[in-house]
Image 1 (cartoon, helix red, strand yellow):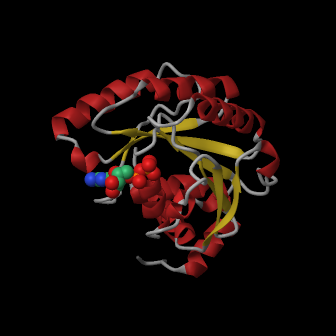
Image 2: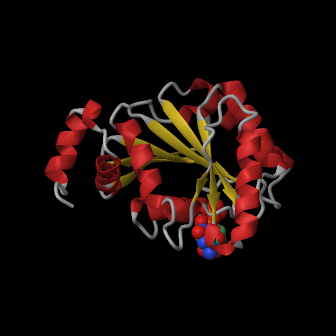
Length: 229
Ligand code: GDP
C-alpha cells in the first residue's frame, strides 16, 4: 500500500474528516484493530459498568453464534474473548479497550438452553438498562448464524434496540458453512426484517471468522466510530 503504516494512520486519525477513500478507511481499521486490546472490566450489575470514556461498540447474539470467534478475528487475537469464558464470566458484560480509542463490549450470549429463568431475567434487565443508559454506545452488532437467520430471541433484541434507540447492524456469522443459495435467501430475509426496525442499519454484513470474509470491512466501519465519524 502506497501510504501504509502507523504514521499515515495516526495522521488520518488526527483529521477524521480526511477519512475519505475506502482504502484509507480499511487501512485505519487494520491499524486500529492491530493495537493493544485490553480487558477493562466485567460487569454483572450496573454498578460495575465502567464510566463511559470512549466511543463504544457492543456485540450481541445467541450463545454459540460465533461472537467470540468474530471478536477474536477482528482483533487478530486467538484468546481475547475467551478471557470471558471462564466460569461465572459468561453472564456479564465484558469491556475491552482497543488502542485506547474504542471500547468493545462482549454482551452475554442469549438463548442459552441451560440458563435459568432468574438468570435470564437478571441479564435482560441489566442489558436493558445498559442499552438505554449508555450515551457513548455508537452501535450494537447483532450476530446471527448465516445458516439459520433470525430467531425469536434475535427479534426480541431488535425490538429492545428500537426501544432504546440504539443504532444496530445485523451480521451473519459462519457464512463459510452456508450453501451459497441458502446464504442469499437468508441474507435477503434478514435484510427485509431489518428494514422494519427503525434502529437497524439497512445493510446486513456477511462474515466468517474462518475465511475472514467481511472482517476487514467491519474493522473499517467500526474504526470510523473511534475517529469520531
Ligand atoms: P459464541 O458462543 O457466540 O462466542 O461462539 P464461538 O465463537 O465460541 O463459536 C461457536 C462455535 O462455532 C465454535 O465451535 C467455533 O469454532 C464455531 N465458529 C465460530 N465462527 C465460525 C465461522 O465463521 N465459521 C465456522 N465454520 N465456524 C465458526
